[in-house]
Image (cartoon, rainbow, N blue to C red):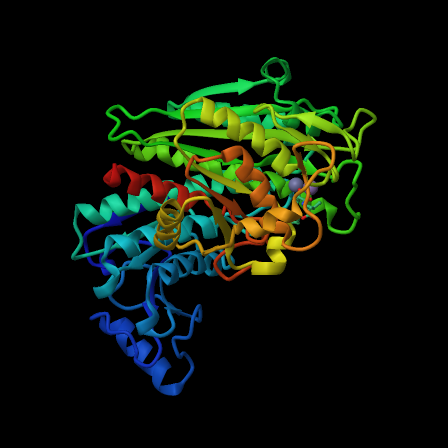
Length: 490
Ligand code: BES
Ligand code: MN
Ligand code: ZN
């Protein structure tokens, strides 16, 4: 999808449809008689009320270069914020492409002409255009070809905002495409190849550690998870080095990359197991964020690490009770092979710290328990540092991704005791997301860190008017926003 902005009134822009956002309570006033009279009639008869995502279409509107005028319900005017703008961008694209209306012009009037809304509309429009139908011979819907934003009172800051939004939307779709790939098509080595290809085309440095190098380094925890699969593991490392770094922040973004999670010997029930292809959603969000960072070029150093494995119950698989030595030297008693995410993350965390990373964010589809706690709405955010957690939560808010702080009280540590090794890989009963985070904290030590449990939010079971069913790419926009903020902080 091609997006652009023009600083001229919408009536002169040729398109298959000219879209006007219409709030509840009063008909829109566009200054275009052909549109305003039509809208006034719809509102006074009650045929159209402006409720969220409602749609009305007028063919061959008088005085417009476009073939159609469209009213898209925007809800209550007082509720307009960037989150709503993002959804409206998505809903516009999704409702029109389902009607094969593929070249759009969108009128930005009055309150819409701010960088914040323009960026959000572009992000939403691109994200809305994504369909998880790559492997279907017959596509369910066509793709929107172009969206032109008409902002007669706009200037270059709106053009920059549109560029940011387009970069973020495309990066999010890149991540969603990775997440959507099934385990057979995207095993660890293929995830690494796609990350390396993206990195090379964007000018990022890349290093893929293979099994041999990980063995030399002593990454016994990550390799224990990998050993049950015929698919070799990979530790993907991507580096963004700014031309002129400001300050001494070196951010480490770590994403869980389990390309398929059967549970291993502690095997999962077969019902819904197919969904476990999204167990690399954290890794994909990190890879996509690096793609956006490479294009937006902030002056902050960022290193991304994605431990990639397949968790399988092969004949060489790790057994419950096995004790492994992690890269840091701490030993782990593997009581449940389905708690594999934390086992691969801890070796990546130690490696990140060794590379000089001094702040860490990790994103992982880590526990089913986070869905019990927060459902499919909020990401759970766990941290060892309140200041750093607040930075992350502020970035999430600005990026329109809902995240909620979770407790990491030491009292929960009593649940994590191993009789035979330094740590067990699961807690005993209750607070499953918290004990998982506490486990990770043992390897993070004093580096400021936030762990994001995205198991509940990385996959949409039902489509929304503004987003398809399937992978969401959650986390990505927050990471990029956080890096932008670190730039002015350092
Ligand atoms: N990948 C799963 C977590 C998950 C569950 C993600 C549902 C998305 C949807 C993770 O590896 C896992 O299996 N966690 C276990 C931990 C348990 C064994 C302590 C879980 O949540 O059941
Ligand atoms: Mn698991
Ligand atoms: Zn998993």
